Image (cartoon, rainbow over all chains, first blue to last red; front, top):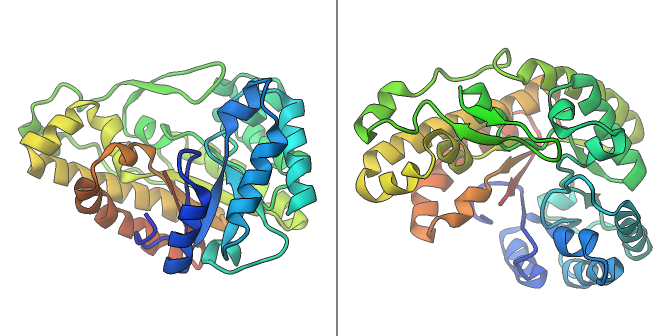
Length: 93
Length: 230
C-alpha cells in the first residue's frame, strides 16, 4: 500500500499504528488511523479516551500522521462516546 | 494536506471515515441520505462542524460505482446498500469481457446527485477551511461487486479473465477519481479498496497496484492529494 503511488494510506484497527508509521516515514507518505470504532463506540465497558491516547502515542511520533478511524462510522453509535473521543483527541493533538 | 503528503504538522489533523453516520444526525434512513444531494451536502457540513474535523468525506458508499454499472442493490435503513446481483455473476469466464458494462461518466447512476452535493458542500467547507474528501471504490472492490465470489475462482483458473476485469475496474476507479478531483474539486481523493486486503501479496501486486495507477494519475494531474484506504 505504501508503495502504491498514493500520497497517503489509511489502515484499520488491526494494524499497529507505530509499525505503519515506520513504513510511512520510509516511503515519505502520510498515514491515517486507526481509532477502534466498533469496540469503543458501541462497547460500554471500554474507555474511548484510552484508544485516542493509543493513537496519539503511536502515531504522533511520526511525520505525516493524521488522526482517523479504523473503519467507517455506522448509524446508532453512542453519540456521547464519539463526542468524548473527539474531546480527548482535541486535548491531546 | 501537508500531513497527508508525509510532513510533520502541529496540531495533529483529524479526518474521520464518516460512513452513514450523518443519517443518524439528520434523523433519516441511510437509504434516503445516500440518494439525496441536499442531505449529503448538509450531512458533510454538519459532521465537520460537530466533530471539528480538518477534512470530511462527501459520500461513503463503496457500492456507488457498482450500482451505476448495473449491479442490483439491497438498500438498508442503517448503512450503505449491499449488492445482491450483477450482470456478470452467472456468466462463464470466457464471456465476462464481452459483457463488461459501458464505462460510466458524470451523468451515470447517482453521479448527478453526488456532484450537486459536492459542489454545495465544497462551498460551505471552503469557508471553514475544511478539506472535502471524495472516496472512490478501488479496482478490487468494483471487480468483486461485478463478479461476486467467482472473482476468486477466476484468479486461480482464468487469470486472463481476472486481469481484464481488474483493468476495467481500474478504469472505473479512475473515472470516479477524476470526477471527484476535477468536476467537484475535492481537495483529497481516496481510493477505498477493502476487499483487496483479502488477496495474497502476489495477487495484490499483480492485479491491484497496476490498476490503481490511472486513478493516482487523475488525482495528481488535478493537483489534488491522494489516499489509499484498505
